[in-house]
Image (spheres, rainbow, N blue to C red):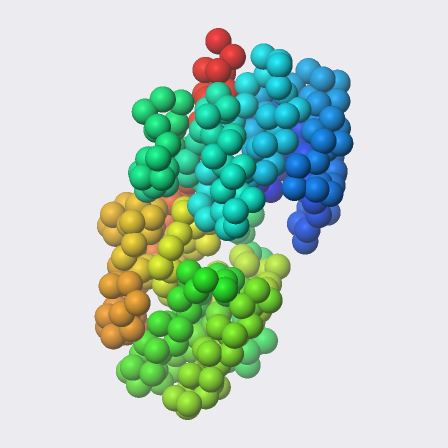
Length: 349
C-alpha cells in the first residue's frame, strides 16, 4: 500500500518524502516511485543516531507532518520531533508481535497528534486494549492503485500445464507461524470441491519462510488425500496481477486480519471472493454483500460455498462485478490520499 501511495502522491497533491529504516524486496521500486526516497538503518531498538538523522531530514525539508506505520518507527519519529510543533501520526495496521513493539506502542500512542486505524474493527480493538479512542482517533481505509493490477494477459495456466478451460481457485497469503491465515482449512475443503469439479485446481501464493512447518502440514495433507497434483504451492511471487488474472475464485481463510490488501486487490480485479466470517473480512466486503462468507475454520462450509460458485458461472460473474464496483469505490488509492490530506490539513489549522 505504501508503494502505491508513493507512486500516486504527486498526482494527488501530496508532497511526500519517504524514509525507510531498513531494506527489503521492494526497495528498488520505492526508489523509482517518483518521490524522494531515503534509506536509513536502525541498528538498535532505540537508536539515537537514527532519531538525529530523522530530525535533520525533517528540518532541511521543512516537513510539517510525520507519519509512521510501525510502533518502533513511530517512537523514533517522536524522538526526532520532540520539542517542535511538527504533527505526529501513527497508523495501526494490526498485529505487532513481541514485547518491544508492545512497549513502543504503549509509549507512543499518547504522544501522537492523531492515530489512524485501517478499519472500524481495528478501532474497536484499540479501545478494548485500553486506549481512549474518543479523541484523535480516526479510520482511514487502506488504498490500492487499480492500475497496478492491470495484467498484460498472462496467466498461470501454461506454467502449471493446465488447459485453458481449467477452473483455477487460489489464495494469496504468506504462511505465518501463528497460523493466522489458516491455509490448512482450505486444503481440507478441497477434496469435496475436486470431487464435484474434476477440472478444478487450486494455487497457494505466499512465502512460507517464517512457517515451513505449516506448509509441510498442508502438503502432507494433500498427499494423503491424493490431491497433490491439483494443489500448487507457488511460494512468493512478484507477478500478483498475473496470478489474480488467472483465477476464477479467490479465497482467504484467515482467523485474524487487520484490513487485508490481498482481498481488496482480488475484489478490484472483479474476482468472486470467498472469505472467512471474521469481523475485518465482513467489513472489507461490506458485511458480506460483495463476497461470500464461510464459517471460520469450517472446511465443510467452505467446500459448500466453493461448490456453489464452481457450479454457477453466472453467479461468479455477478459477484465479481459487485466486488469490483465496491472495492474501487471504497479503497481506491486516490480516495486514501484524499483522506490523508484532510487529516494532515486538519492538524495544521
